[in-house]
Image (cartoon, rainbow, N blue to C red; front, side, top):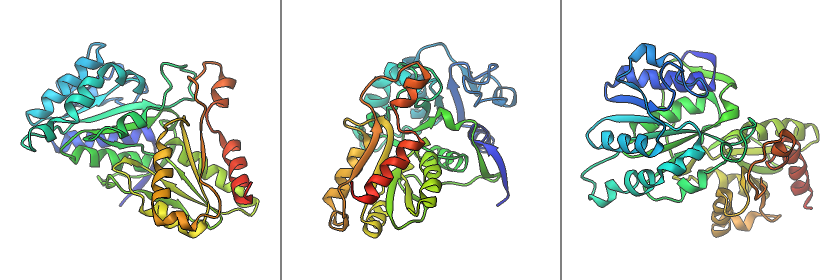
Length: 329
């Protein structure tokens, strides 16, 4: 495969464009995705390339957007919904949770809902409490929804194309801070299977499990830790539902220590599920230290930049916590 350096946002746009070129049933709908090019510039020139009938600029109504997408999916179309901020899915939870997620099951598999819902997630842009949440646990808790959190440009293209192949709804949560990051991405179409965790760094001292932006933050922390003689292994939980515990358990058995990192608040967070599954399996007997969770504080995201950074794990927090776990503190 040919590789080039492109941004996370460009990788998404390329995946959508290639899918639309390949399948005339694929279309996109959302707020400001047309001439404006999207709130985060993701849709870019797709409106000029495919026209207003396939890049649908919608009114400000998340309930209506997702409802229209569910209906279109039921009659054989493949809608890609862009929600401007993941926080706004709260306006469409009935359509997402009670309709899209359940129709295939309730109708005995006779109908499917091949809908992809994309949403910018997380903090770090000064967007304050109503535009900066990490809501992945909401969706991962719902049977019938698949949930992925791509951590790099390569991951987002492969997971998005895989999501478009899925016969039922997939939620793709894209961290805002990743849109401008760059990486190697093949120009050709490729798929990353949903439901497969990925080891992104080898190590023997400690296992770090992370997703989304916390993967790159953990990789950066790993370089600092390496200089201190602590080689960490990092597992990217790129698919929250279904969740693949295989690489996590194998890593925990090897290192005997594990730290679970997430931006979302600690209380009832997704990493609590990972911790529980470690405790329920044979990996528990290989632990030499208790499972450590490093999570966001249980507070709304503040507007002030200093406060915003203080309530979610940053590079220095990951390094400090990893040192403590490695020393058995």
